[in-house]
Each structure stands twice: as structure tokens, then as C-alpha cells.
Length: 257
Image (cartoon, rainbow, N blue to C red; front, side, top):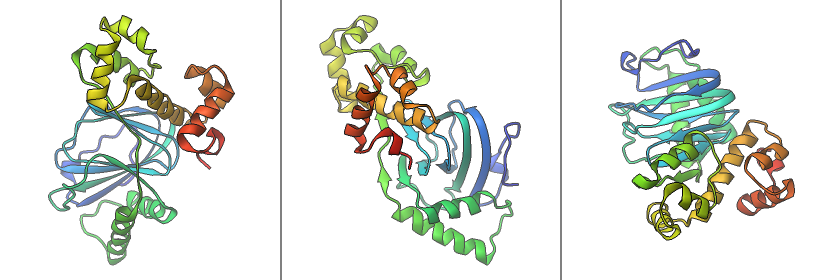
């Protein structure tokens, strides 16, 4: 079995195979915080957008990108609307990937086809000569794939914990610095120091990065530019388009083309 519906539960420990592919199509999903002690994981979405949270980072996974999740890392994956969910688990007792951290890579058309093939294999325990050849191409494509940054560091200072949960889990637009200071009960200088220390960014830059990544998520869900602009508190559609182009080099309408 390589296809998993939402009622089924996958027990990796019962499958004696170094590479386990999985395909599923889910409308809405929240994995809750969990980890895989003996398996690293590769996530891929031909359509839709996923969001991964750790206790220190948020990583978005737009379509046609691949995310590597190290074994043992506690994380939570969420998405809404239809996502063609593809996942590959790597048994770290048989494959050495301990030098890799949490990261996102670009998926070429060939890489995408190879991932599809692996995710629809039956779990047999041994590989045919053809499957071994496909795995060799998979690793070639993986190591050559360009790394891309969709990571947002999350401050862990206790004074910000409650508001960080709201920004990350409830998708609420972070307020301006003076409003955050009032909500937290700390000075603007204190909050600014926390963000500089823990994210290497000013609060304003962090807030803008949050809005950019949230915009990418919404656009991947086929949300209109007007609605994205409104949800992210831009003064106008043109202001949002200019903001997006300044950060990505292209307009929102062309981002996923």
C-alpha cells in the first residue's frame, strides 16, 4: 500500500524498508506536534501549500518544493484546501542523512516524476532493479537541487510566548511594534532586543517576512490578490503587489507560473 486516506494510520516501525513512499490527498490537516525517532522525512506538494512549525521555526512549503525534516525533530504540519500530499521516509539506520538539517529545496520536473514513482510503490521490503535505478536518480536529483529559504525564526522568550502562538498557529497578522509592546507589557526597546538576539532581524523586518510567507501560503490556496491584500492589512492591492515584488522580484500573479 502506498496511498493513505485520512482514516488510516501509518506505523513506520512495522515497515522494514529503507525508503517508504506515501501518497495522499487531504483537504485539511493538522498533524499536531510529533517526531519520527528513526526516520527522516521528505515532504512534497505538487499542489497546495504546507506549513511546518517547530518550537523555534516556521517553514512554509509552497508547491514544487521539497522539505527535508531530520529524524527526531519535533514538528507540526498544517495545511488547508486540497494538497496532493507526498511524503518519503528515510530509515536512518540504513541511510546516513545525519548531516542534513531542516531545509527546503527546489524540485525539478524530473525530480517530481521520480518522487511520484517512489510514493506510489507498494511496500515490499526489497527493490527491483528498476526501482534501484529510480532511487539512484532520486539521490542525484536531491543532492543537485537548489536550496531555498522559507524559514522564519520564532522568538522563544517567555514574555512573547503567548503572542507568538497566536501569530504562528492562528495566522494572525503581527501588530506594529508599539501595539505589541502594549500587549506584552514590555518596552519597545526590550522587544526589539529580543527579536535582534533570537531572529537576527528587527521586529519590523520580521513582521514583513511573516506577511510575505503568509501571502505565499494564501496565493498557493488560490486566494485572490484583493483578499490577500485585505487579510494582511495592506492599504491597497497595489501596495501589496509592490511589497511582494520588492521581496521576490516578481508579481504575485506570476509567482507560481
